[in-house]
Length: 502
Image (cartoon, rainbow, N blue to C red; front, top):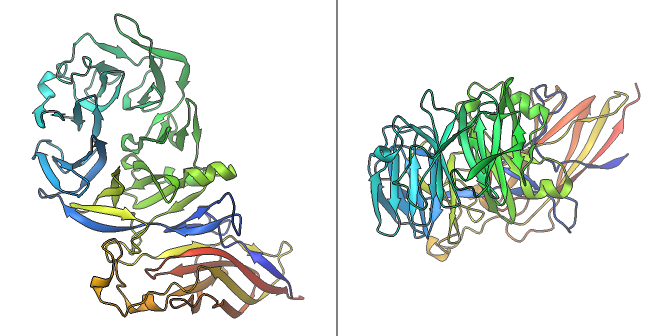
């Protein structure tokens, strides 16, 4: 009876036609260690805990910004300042005329500017005072997005007639905008749809084209276009643009519609989504509402992109992908199957904070949290297709799963026993955690369940996780699911099978 290693560890590879490939990794992600027991394993994604409320209501918008020991958020039409405790302070109540949509934020030495496509707010971090900066902008200029380089804010417009124009502010002065300090993005006809800086290169993203500019140090207008850095794509979703860890990420668009998810490391964009993922995103109703941000947690760098209308979240593991030279994606879901609630991310002190797209709460993100603010996290791995190349039926006799065991939670101590950053067990089932196994023989359309197996009460580290007599099938797709708020690390699996004579 052959026994073979079963590829339970993997990333997102789901095809439009799941009979070709149904692979998914949800609320887990693949890690590729430099050394270790195996080449890779599945790691649990961090949980969330509510730590504050934004008093004016509404929901978190796409961008937040850390500067000089504070984090700044736009929630609905109001701007907030938050410290690391976190104490939430309103600095511009009901300032914007919009409550949803893209927010651009940038800072010079002492000022932070916030723009929403209609108005601009300027906050002086030295005096802790703010002003409506909209009247200081060039006449008729609707501030769509903003960045900063070499002393100046760089602002693009959403105003008809000047949608390929950018202005620069006076040096370290966001109140002064000379109407002659502008340039045109005109190597190709396009409408500007975002701006970002990476390694002193300014990326002016149009809807279908992109130009890269640099500071040439000239006296009249110091910025100049790099004519050897013109890209035949732009940005489809302005809020998908995210810079961090010497990289730039965004959802691209070109004359044929939605393009790939791109990463710039240096000056050259490269696609990090594969054609199957691209096809899926191209079929979305509103890919232009995608929101992206980048963060580092558990030693890994991630780019997360959320599609709100189409209710889906993808996460790219930058660190492990670079090790294996393969694009490793996973998905995040809430318990009801909806997209992850995070709409922005900042790191201040030693803490990750995030806002939500569907409430007015501030959340902390941490691997110490094993649920989402008291709500269970469903962690799922759908493995790759299993089939004999010559299509004979296989008798599946035994399936064994190896993972971190003996992690059941001890629920005999009072809540006061637990440190502030550790949540006590929310559910008695967490004391004896279990993993569910199911299998599909129709290409991932329906699944037959084989029940649950314990992976160990606290300290029960030698338990084995085995299912037997799994039936006879011509092909099979196995799925594991775990709901418990315990540490979850999936290492490997093995299967015993034999080919039936026909």
